[in-house]
Image (cartoon, rainbow, N blue to C red):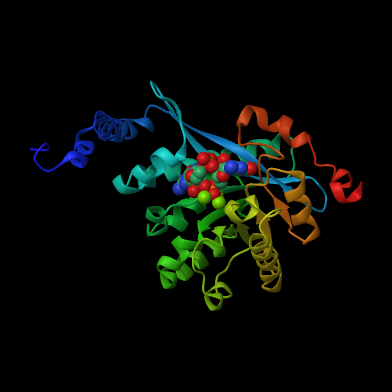
Length: 287
Ligand code: C2E
Ligand code: MG
Ligand code: MG
Ligand code: MG
């Protein structure tokens, strides 16, 4: 039948399509077993204070160690986990594992580092979210202000009335809240001031061309001053070069995260990375 409807329709039957559909089915089946088989792992990306050059916290990012595909990045399975609802138990595991690790690093003398975890839409509508986070914190003995929950701007704006209520419950526990991928959604400024948040995270798409695209530079500078007018911290994501870092620092950005300082690393490598402070005085403008 494909032949009759023309050449272009052949593409519908390509082996590549079948492979993709099969891979999806396979991943979905495997994802159901991944938690009980202990195949998830957190990598940690340090966040650096731009005034002191010191690491003050880290973002926990999940990876799936698949028995045959190897390391699977979140972009390949978080969507699937969302659709199937598996993100709820996976997300709960992420929060627990991140809190346990942060507490272990504190006990090892690394200081009061704050760990940030990403929250997905399905988790955000769970009625017992605040209660389960409270019990995770209590079980591992981590102070609530050492946990930060990242919510994307679009997730918040999707149902802003629900978001305000749910975020107030979380804030009441004492955990910090931040808006992830800020600038990519459509925040209404009047809502922004009603949200109990501590920080905005500037999306990496604006940071990338900060040095060559005046519009991106203007957007980043505006987000920084907006955050500060609302008495919020501001952290830049995806910082890869000294020039980007210097732009951010000279515009008063509070903190940064990106390959320039470190990629996300397995827990075992984190202690070494924490020791490598950025020498603020070595930045280009000081030369
Ligand atoms: P995100 O929360 O915005 O995390 C930042 C992503 O940017 C991470 O990708 C990180 O590795 C990457 N990144 C950091 N610095 C740089 C840089 O300098 N250059 C470039 N090009 N990229 C950089 P990753 O780990 O692949 O995670 C992708 C997304 O998957 C995250 O975006 C987050 O939305 C989601 N995700 C990761 N872990 C979890 C999780 O535990 N739960 C949920 N719900 N989502 C997660
Ligand atoms: Mg994030
Ligand atoms: Mg982000
Ligand atoms: Mg993102």
